[in-house]
Image 1 (cartoon, rainbow, N blue to C red):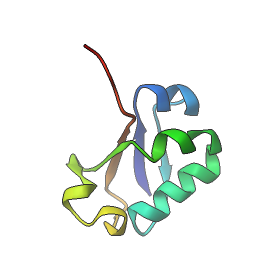
Image 2 (cartoon, helix red, strand yellow):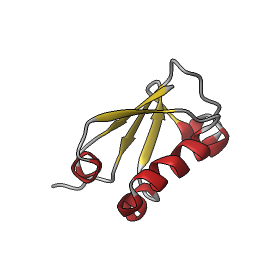
Image 3 (cartoon, rainbow, N blue to C red):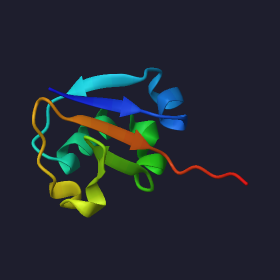
Length: 81
């Protein structure tokens, strides 16, 4: 199972820092996260997803394949000034 780590607001919504999920690719993993935490929907659409520290945008997006050793980090958008 891949480890999913939540940060900032997503950590508050989930009530935990990480969980383990089984999924073939990022799209399937995010669907499973939404099934478990439907209230994350408004955040996940605009969140940054990293697989082993690499942004999935620079790999294959939602089609990025996952293995049991992968660590997926999900960061909601942050602002500041």
